[in-house]
Amino acid sequence: MGGWHGKTGKTNDMDTFSALLDSVYESATDPDQWRVFLEGLASTLNAKSGLFRVVDERTRTLRTGIYHNLDEQLQAAYQQYYVSQDPIVEALTHAPDVYVAPGEAFLDSRAYRRTEFFNEYARPQDNYYICGGLAMRNAEFTIKFGVQRDHRSGPFSWDDAGFIRRLVPHIQRSVRLGHLLRVADARAASSDRALEAMAVAVILLDEQRRALTMNTKAEAMLRDGNDLTQRDGILRAGNTANAATIEQLLSVVTQRARAGGPAAPEAALLQHPADAPQRLVVALPVTSTQRHFLDPWPSANVALFICSLEEAGLLNREVLRRLYGLTHREAELAIALSNGDTLTEIAGRWSVSTETLRTHLKRVLGKTATSRQADLVRLLTGKPWNLMSDPSAAPRALGRTEVH
Image 1 (tube, rainbow, N blue to C red):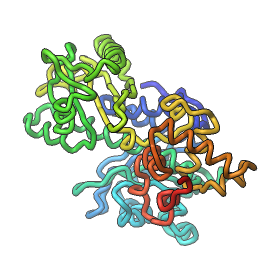
Image 2: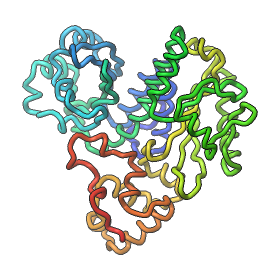
Image 3: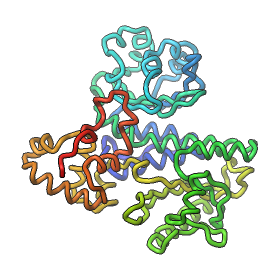
């Protein structure tokens, strides 16, 4: 297993974000990659450590944990005892099913530092500040995750939480796909139900690009035929505008799978009609040496994910520039608005007039094919108001539009 090779403290660097996504999706077929992901996330956010925990909230028991740079003996003690005393678990019990925030947002810092948990478990590891929350909750368990800083590094910000939040949908998909691919002895019907649990269209392809199985979202997309279709049993682009893009994407990933790795994903943005949502396609190679892919998919070669950009939530300056052709200033404006700043606040911070910003905003709206500021925020942030427990923390632009 290789370690993290990305950059430190670079949350706006596209290569860093892409490397983190690689680790997330590689973890679907190689669970050891979750530790590489945690190492990378901690490095990116100037944190000392990171963790995933699968916790049963009803019994307050730990099912499993994945850790980076945390004391092994204290992790064993956590499973045996401290999980039942963990104020973080208690604080997140009533949080939304997906929630990410700095620790100060859901913990009373003074009360927390008086607890047995902090003084006997967190403090000996120098875990003074945390950022994280819930990646997933279902009827059986929750997946809690986060990163930690020591007392010298200072607390995390909401920008740090926002960076983590952009990764949550991808973590969810990788976890679900990883589970799906490790139930090789289950009946095909059970596997189909696992695919149906995913919130995006999923297609598993063989080496000839024939669909071995898919969920109902993917079936509906193929019937529609606008983005993807099947001809002679082979998956193809639904229109000539996307033919070269899909061909290159599948060729690269199929060859990578045939060669036995690396299990790194590739992504492409599809062209679309004016009245249709923009689609993002992510393809993950499945190498034949991995024993996860036994029956019911004996020859699965590529796992294909298709979602709208609204579902993906791409809030990154370099990503926005590449996808929409925005200038640096336009991308910065789009991100600032999506973070809840008003034009007046941004104008004061940048020392420009609001009229200048309105001109920039109109260009952004045109390039992203949105007609209102609220629509722009919704597109770029992937519905962040569903990820926050405090309604007052939701982007303020959703409640008012400054461009008419």
